[in-house]
Image 1 (cartoon, rainbow, N blue to C red):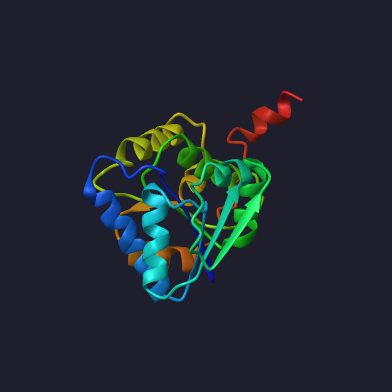
Image 2 (image 1 turned 90 degrees about the horizontal axis):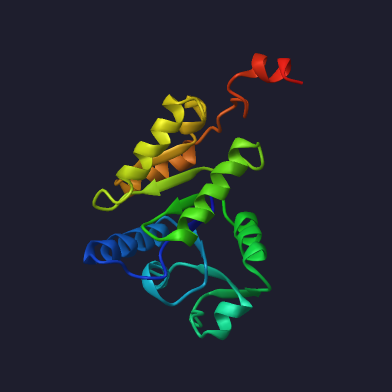
Length: 197
């Protein structure tokens, strides 16, 4: 594993602990010799994690759509900044550059990005680990909903294991290094699906 993509809020959130944990993650990424791949912004938790990597001597590649760069939210002090034409191009490029994906607290965009990566894993597109780095219980309700998806047979238990959730940065990075993707079928009721053809 050489690079980690971090999805997180373009706002800093209501609690200082969100920024503190974003900075701790950035520092650890740099000290473990990993490159940060992220959305290229200089605002919110995005700016915090990027600056922490840079301050610790690490390498950062930002990928940002032209529209957001025009809004002057692009971080101009990165190791590398790629400006792309659209959000779709941004996500595809970040997928290509990263060996794994970590989610800090964030809003709609953060959720959309990590769930697309989980969906791609479910469909066998790529074999890259996905993790929710929880901060102060922020993701506990969401993880509960994912567990209910398993209980209600919308998601394989094995595919739930494709997702790490916790607060320990070192444990998360070790899980990502040791990651073995689930081999479960997209379909839970395979016999029933065949019968409906």
